[in-house]
Image 1 (tube, rainbow, N blue to C red):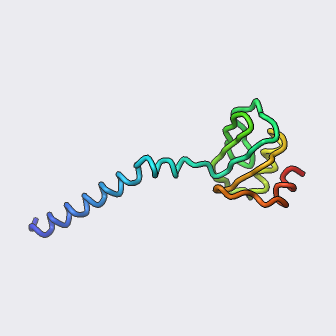
Image 2: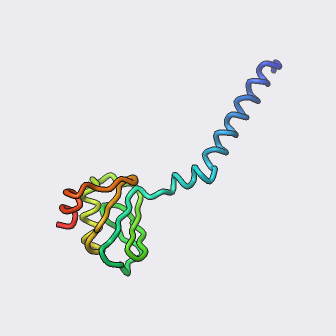
Image 3: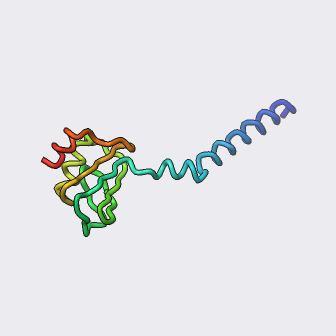
Length: 107
């Protein structure tokens, strides 16, 4: 191997190590673990885990959170409501569901 080849390999290896370190940093891991769905319930639920719209929601008190689903947001909300009761706030990626959709969810 020539000196230039060794130097290129070292540069590529260092870049890969930096990329891996960034991917597993606390901030990156926190972003990956942030819930896609968050539901605030009208009343506390006794359920700790609920499957709705193909999503495994984890619930505590009046809050249920879950990862992304292939189903439409309104369907996930409606199915969750059937399992845990009225939903007063439903967020998708941190954005509130429109009031008209929330009303249909609780319909």
